Amino acid sequence: MRCLHASRSGAPSARLFFSPEKLAVKEILGFGAAMDAPESDPCPVKENVPLFSCDQFDKAVARKISQMLLFGLSTACVDNTTGLFKGPASVAVVIRKEMVDYLKQRSQAYIAEATIQGGANATSVDEFLEGPTEVVSVLIDEFVGTKRNLFSRVSGWLSSEGREEKIDDFVQEMETNVFWPIDRREAVAAILIQNVDLRNVFHCSIKFDSAEQLAEHKSQCGYRTLNCMNNGCKAKFSAMHAEKHDLECPFKIIPCEQMCSEMIMRREMDKHCITVCAMKLVNCPFFQVGCESAFPQCNLEKHCSEFLQSHLLYVLGVIHKQEASMEELRMRVQLLEKSHSINELSEALDVRSLTLAIKEQEAKMRKLERNVSKIQNQQELIKNTK
Image (cartoon, rainbow, N blue to C red; front, side, top):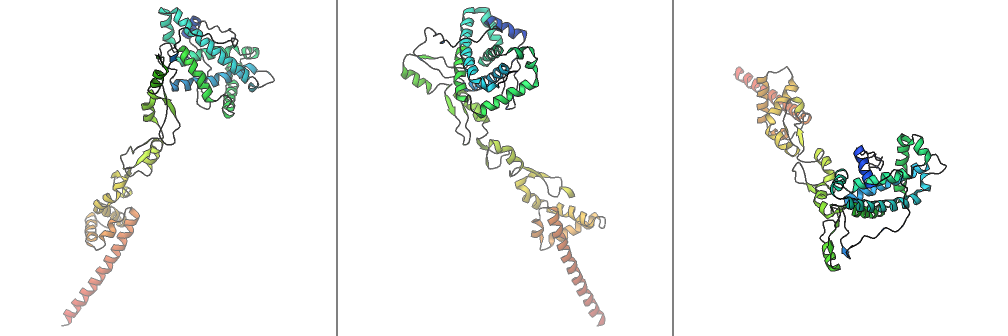
């Protein structure tokens, strides 16, 4: 199986390993491990190329290949300078040019050889190399092999962790210094895609008789480049992937997943749903004293109002503990419900506030009971003295 090394930046590298089947395909295509990088001769011109042909391609595939190009260049530069008194940056310019020329010429050789072989061999090639990224991976690995110096070949350097770290460091150095900008790498990737995409799956190969026909087609071509219209998103993609991007774009404003009334940016959805969303499920604030209800956050006041009697009973049980029976607690609830402060009690939305309100109301009720008892005693005394 092919193994892509993952860098600290998360992009795949071009350090590849192949199964025996892959190696067999490389032999079919004539990729010799000892092949030297070709000189920078002009690329042969293909015959019968029409004057007006669409040159648009799948941007997602081009982006993957552009990442592979950067890691392939980094690997070649590091392996080429291992054990020497110079760093990979000192050879990067020269090796970059050699690699681009190599890939262009070998990709053209690939399509020529695959076309000539045809029949069973072409089918075999397609089985192992399903897309441009597979083919370009093989080519990059072959080029990297031609740049390894003697020390790299015999020292065990190819399997060391230090090598991988050095390659990753040089990739980040090139990205920081914009040594090989992404747009230039994608331009190279576009050429490679057109050269190796035999089945015309990843680029447009439609031909036209006039520039007007071509221009009209390009405005509707499925491979044309689109910019995401969502505010904050800088993504570019082929038109055929517009729907997929729309379903994944982190900057798109969409309805709340919990069906509250707000519209939320997709990237902020999780945070919204677990913090401020009105439809976030919450436990009843009287859960600790016995109410096990759960409901959307926006229904808190409604719940506390509807279940005031049971909440009063729970809190009274905590206040009086074992001092009162359940029947006495129910009687106290009825008295509290008949009091003039029932609205004040219904506004209490947690255990603490309801406990304080109950204690205040009970204090008033006890004072009232004492006054009533005192008046009754006085009336009884007056009656007895007559």
